[in-house]
Image (cartoon, rainbow, N blue to C red; front, side, top):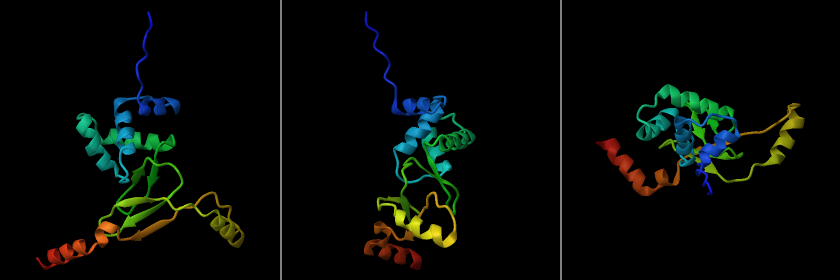
Length: 155
């Protein structure tokens, strides 16, 4: 008789590979962050995970987010409105829309020449850098969006 092993989820494999316990809440949090590209806050993650696990607490979400960041599975981004979390752990830049607040990943390559220019001028040893771009996203820059915003301002 042949025993067919249980199929393990990608989150379960990832967590086990980092030596973390594979709790339902932790798997749900990691799955939720991997399924989105909006760079959510902890509160947003809490609301989404609570749909699947109604008894999960905000404290559990915060604690697990910190553990996942510590294990290198998430990146925490400081933001004026609080921390945001990113499941894309590759080195990349971000664009933040100043109107709607959405954060986008940029695929522009990181410029290592910048490190070579900064280090000798300052005497610092540069390990990495992060560049943030701010402006209006394509959706908020469209003429239709501008007309709607002007109409709301008059009302």
